[in-house]
Length: 276
Image 1 (cartoon, rainbow, N blue to C red):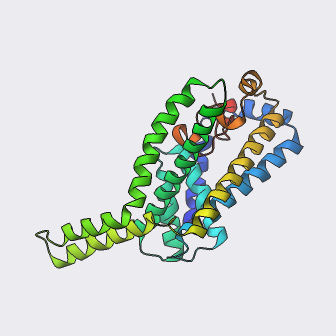
Image 2: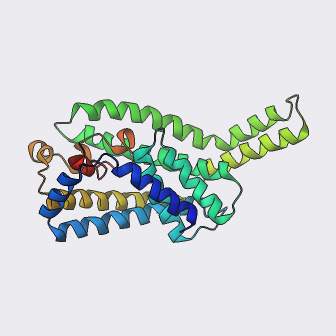
Image 3: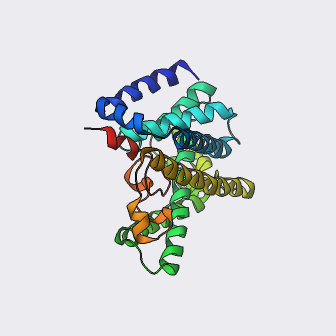
């Protein structure tokens, strides 16, 4: 891990813990069951490692990123997303990889992060539509969120599918702009890199790996949720009352926090029990 990543992790850790009630945190920690807590940590670490591998698959055609670099960049980006507005952690992930590898096309890396988010939203929409069609009782938020995410997914999917055509149109427009040839070349390069990143899922093998890994990640994080709740002695009352599968119990974190997994008990909310 680079010095940059280490420095960022220290700063983010300080920000994350600045409002923690340490007395209550220690009391909670003393009462935690060690076995499920260790299992939860292992599951969460593995899910972040798989997230890193998933994003690495999107960028691998253009830049060689080691598995550990992808893991640390992804883990730090999710931590930053929990603390910073506008999902700034996603930009941080691209910047860490760019500096670590020396790869100059920042636009390409950011575009792959956006594609990753759009693909996750599309997956959530598909799951939600299945829930709407098959489950008798659904939370009101799910029906509303499905419509919102469906619109976002549709726009994003259309943008990805038309990325190549849009690139040609935009570059043609850039070529007639009344500016210097250097500026036109620079703008055209940025558009080409953005288009290349947007087409990162166009290879069938990459798409299969991405969605298979996504399913495994969500399964791991649901397992983490259950383990951490057991360790802290928390009852998932909404699960017991509704009888719904875990992914449909609360708004997915992709809309309300830094995670993109539809968990019933967000791992980011675990700290809320120890905050003032």
